[in-house]
Length: 531
Image 1 (cartoon, helix red, strand yellow):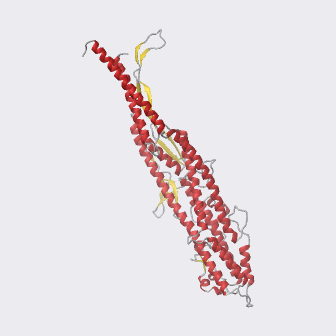
Image 2 (cartoon, helix red, strand yellow; image 1 turned 30 degrees about the vertical axis):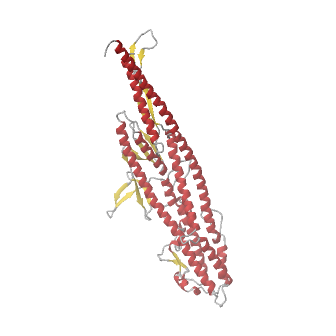
Image 3 (cartoon, rainbow, N blue to C red; image 1 turned 120 degrees about the horizontal axis):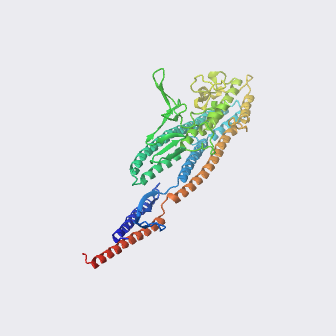
């Protein structure tokens, strides 16, 4: 091979070694950068210089022209990426469920004023027992009325806290939806920039691809996603089977508040917009909702993925009351899967049962007869009734009648014969002791007023334990997947330093090679007297 041509080999070695050293330095610089993907230089041979083609020989006589820098690629595993984004979404789902149950357990254990609600029930039970011992005692009557007032106040504190938490989760729905749209917009922008940079085939937009992968990781935590990259470099993303990003187009998720102000995420491009008879703009989101919240939640069919879906399920679509428990099919379809609504309904069922039972017993005894004289009454009488046609007496709108709070002695507990009414007082005791209630239509165990609340708290605690176990196991799966992924995409300082030494030596070898060729050329030129 001509000596001048040999310089190409040395020059290619210098250039390629320098590119590899630059990439290695870039990897080491981003050693602790979150979401960075290790980059790797691919090398290939330059075109061979054919000197002679001899038919009698097996191969042509060729001389290589050195090494060529092919591309700098990212080292990623598509399967591990998909697995991680699915499993982190499932982990986020059970994390929200666990946190919700833990928060509700705290609310049930301590009302907003710091006094455990169970204390108010115990105090009321004690007042009923004392009343049964001496019904005509003004002290016992006053204690009974006072504890009933405290019972209602404590119950309202708990219920209001549940509703407040429900509203906070509604705000979280809006925040998560905005995050999805922001990530979608960012992915679309990155699609354009990546395609523009890589269109010529000379450069890889690896750092932009890292940014896009970080967006996909974040989206996978919020919702169930699927995605694919086309031959041009565009990544299309779907959420729950519908397009979110397609090329450089974003299909945003919109929010529609219901009559209670609770948001429902829907696809803006799939909804029907129209004007009603009054000229008001309306939107029909039938078949445009992002999530199907009616389907069974199960890992087998991948319906337990995404933080946003978990928040929607836990929140429900209204503040539930005992009335939601009266229709079994309605309860199973619309209430049971919502953590907060289920607890609200069960809790309100206890309060309604106690109020209704006390009203009935006192009304039958003639002490609180008539709508205006009911012991427990509605704060604002609006004539509303429940599914059974009875007055809608919920903790949200109930109070102890002010006339009894001012004059507890109106509950005389004295018979027409001027004797203490032990019979009516004993009916109250029996009512509190009777085990005739179930937490919900799907529970067979019956409990009384005294044990109902502890059973409710135990149910929440047990459910929280189950969800926490699932979440803990899921976190282990996510961590194992991430560890496997980091073994591929992560930067190892030891490995990169090894590459740096290797290609530094390669650079030095190419440099010495050029020096040798240079010396040989100098010697030859001097020998022939060429200066």
